[in-house]
Amino acid sequence: MESWKRRGFGPAVLVKELHERDRRRMLKHFLALEKSDRLLRFGTQLPDELVESYVNKIDFSRDVVYGVYNRVFKLIAVGHLAFAPKEKSPAKHAATTKERVAEFGVSVLRSTRGMGVGTKMFERAAIHCRNNDVDTMYMHCLSSNQTMMHIAKKAGMEIQRDYGEADAYLKLLPPNPASVLQEAVEEQFAMLDYTFKANTRAAVKWLDRLPGRKQD
Ligand SMILES: CC(C)(COP(=O)(O)OP(=O)(O)OC[C@H]1O[C@@H](n2cnc3c(N)ncnc32)[C@H](O)[C@@H]1OP(=O)(O)O)[C@@H](O)C(=O)NCCC(=O)NCCS
Image (tube, rainbow, N blue to C red; front, side, top):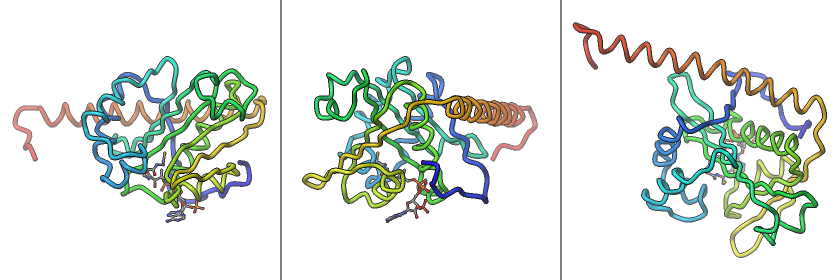
């Protein structure tokens, strides 16, 4: 992980944990994905109702969902790190001696791809697993998904391909003080950024509602 390419230019990618209040924006993000991207993200062409049901069923007390908000408080990326007891996933059982396994799925809007957002989300999920006694992070995707295969290989994931699909496993190191601090600092910065953008957005909306103000 440490050897991954560091992107020295452009705005920092601030990955924030999402909560109940972000659910509506998460749905908007998924519904805005192009058809082919929805297929890559979910492995099947999910209709809108099932996407909505997936979002409604996300259990924030068990899983962690990450997001990246852009300048105008639009959710441009969502990553879902789902945890399950290893007994529930016999195929992944063998890969770990820990109690739980984690599976990560991510999507980034087309307009903001190629800027390191997907990689940063992936790194953030991996460090969270590491700090929470999970030593194997798993990803399932179509093997035709060149971009995700590239990110997986770059991270050193072991990839097993079968009938057009691919399972990738990342073995993680145990936590250390640096990994714990890194996760806490990243969340703190992302939280400040989120609060600033949310307040700015609220202020702009409020100003737009003032009498005599021209509406676009
Ligand atoms: C996969 C996805 C999340 C990547 O997001 P992103 O923000 O563009 O990712 P990054 O910018 O961090 O990295 C993209 C990397 O893939 C590389 N890449 C882009 N297109 C590629 C292609 N066709 N073949 C190989 N590599 C490719 C880029 O060069 C970059 O590599 P680098 O970091 O070594 O320079 C995004 O494309 C997406 O949302 N796809 C649809 C949903 C999906 O496939 N989800 C994954 C399944 S869970």
